[in-house]
Length: 155
Image (cartoon, rainbow, N blue to C red; front, side, top):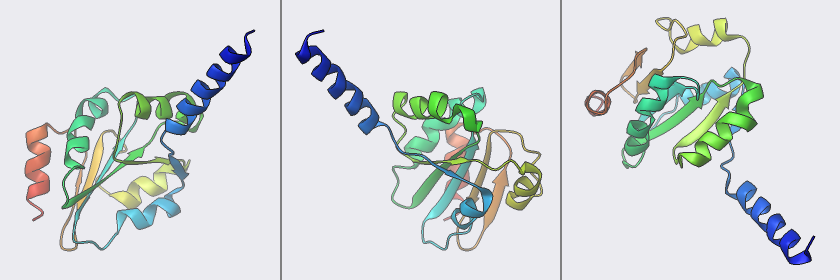
């Protein structure tokens, strides 16, 4: 094989790995501080997975919301740990997700689901919205208008 071609392939491979967004895998105790931040900004935490069609449909609304200065969006992936490298990271790259993404890797879902909200059955999508004065949990998918109206009600 031509040495220039080998160098080219190595550079392309390195570049694709360098461009891939890093996603931390957290257990619930590591995630918990992100669910209870004190901030002037409205916190929007969306629980989703790459295999959840309603989750994928509403992701662009969260991405657009993330561009606001008064809102902070966190996307918590509930993809299976074995799918992080093969599905989650390529999905983030393909769709150019710019919001902060973490991967919840904690097998004790009975515990952490109830800790996040006693109203949560565990179904996806689900969203936690809060500020310093108010906290709401939504086990539903949102239209763009519904999501923006709900977030705006926190101001």
